[in-house]
Length: 268
Image 1 (cartoon, one colour):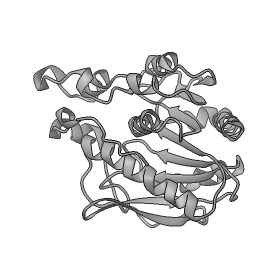
Image 2 (tube, one colour):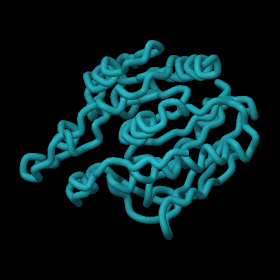
Image 3 (cartoon, rainbow, N blue to C red):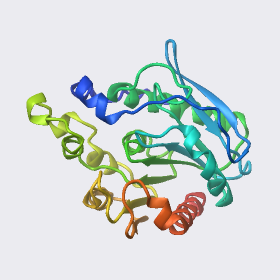
């Protein structure tokens, strides 16, 4: 694997930003669905490990690496892991630092470095298990930043990309969350550059966004979609839904479209 160095995100490493972007909590150990999974411990940096889970479908299934939102942990996805399996995906959700079983403290720079370590680990996991399906990446909300970082860095290795409730522009989101970006003197160019990153990915793309998203505007989802150069892209609008109830209003279309993307990825 070529050596990839994430950009400098230190201007976004201020405590005022971390406090609103990250809401870590530990695992409870509760497994209401009783589903089977393999616990993953992913080395990130010295003395830092990240937690994840591997939910298996079949050895031939596409493999979906999933980055969740800021108030979520891997354990929260135990209930719907079976839905990913039913559409024929090996489901691999991962946590950020300080979330679930992960050690360390979350921050923007750490998150952007860690997704590269996670990507390398998951590729080795797929190879080691003899899995033959393609690798897909999905990011929800905050997780869209990790997903787009990887899509821009390894476009030839990612056979399908899903962005759900993703943000195109960081500063409006920070202002909505109560950060005075003018006082901090930060600029959009010093941030995640999600718009620029999606422009470097030409593979199959699915963008999902809620019509009434009250945290990340619907227009952000459209901006990401419009900036994509992919010839195989699709936009799914979930009518009536907001940022936090997208599955309540659109669960059938949500998983149907992800399943269709997985089929397209296998044809690549």
